[in-house]
Length: 206
Image 1 (cartoon, rainbow, N blue to C red):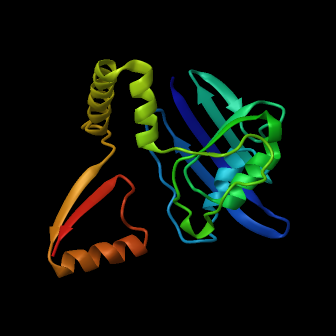
Image 2: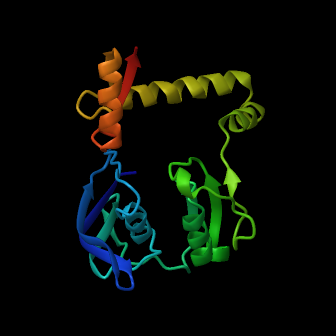
Image 3: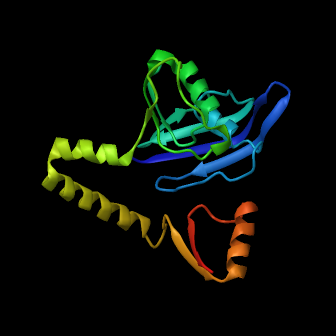
């Protein structure tokens, strides 16, 4: 499946508060893009616009799936959806469950990048949010497939993942090494300033 996202000149906010001004973002098929910034810079608002939870005041959003263009200006709560939560943001989870309610077919928590907004999911409308735990999934697949088939499928998936991650033209991860106090301090400062690319992993030794 080939997916691409085009956001053009997007304005959005909450009443008189403007959270986004003229935001444009194009994500082509196979690309990985990260949104970096301090609290209050509009990252969550942009994701809520893409999810149909905040209606833009101006601009356009288009998702292309295998050549078919879909308008994301607003996602209807009448259309069934699933929610895979990378942020762990309790307020965002509650908004999504409130928007789709019983039309939300599945809700799964995978990550917790919004550590300052982490929270549970008790009492929300729609399905009970589930926590994705890799060892539990592995145990389930061992039961479903058997040990031999599990190892075979795991090896095939891992090989395919490495090939994509190491793609010379568009690598998912670039490893940078450093040694000494100066390397640690400069990396920490760059991280705080939002200057470390999302596809860069740093291995440091003192």
